[in-house]
Amino acid sequence: FYKGNQLPARYKKGAFVVLHGSTIRQPYPQGGYFVAFVPMVNGVVTGPWEVFADGFIQTDPVLTANSAGYRPMGITEGPDGSLYISETEKGKIWRVMFKGDKTKFGAAQLAKMVIRKKTASNIKDPDPIKDDLDRGKPVVASAVYTMYCGACHQRDGKGDGGRFPPLSESEWVNGDKTRLINVVLKGLSGPITVKGLPYSETMPAHGSFLNDDQVAEVLTYIRKSWGNNSDAISREEVASVRRSGN
Image (cartoon, rainbow, N blue to C red):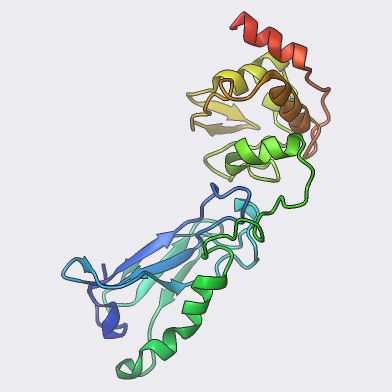
């Protein structure tokens, strides 16, 4: 909530919200990666949210979390009313000041941001057809991956750089088949180590809605992609692990 006077008066007592970047919009481009402003008076919202600061991603569209140039994470107000925006990819901090005529700041100055809200792939609501990144692709194992795995492990199999581990050249992917099949069927919780780094996010179970063919196909796809070159997993192997319960 802005309390200073360095910015134009319209921002007084309003809320600045930093969107670090969403990985859950598959099969559409990722969203977020900008700073929004919510106009308020006495704690009551007085209008629609606005785009305050954008341009962090440096690419359009954002296909994976790792492809964004910067990911805004924090915002704070300085003693003089300046805003400081921090990000997580390179540790950069921006100081935001207003040096124009605050009495003339209004709709004309916000016009470009209004357009950004409607057109930028990381900000607008995606078009169900035009913005589908998998449009026109054959429905194969990669589609199962995109639907159920890509949001966390990303389209390039490299994870998101912090919460979700990579599948690319992972010992969990290229190692014991039974363990890998069980992770998909039953899920996994608790701390693990992947490629020397710790992870603790919960992997949900997929066995209740993916059949043996789908599990076999998607795991084979993963074991043959992003630098992986391990042998295929068959439907029979998945069925055997499912029956054994181990």
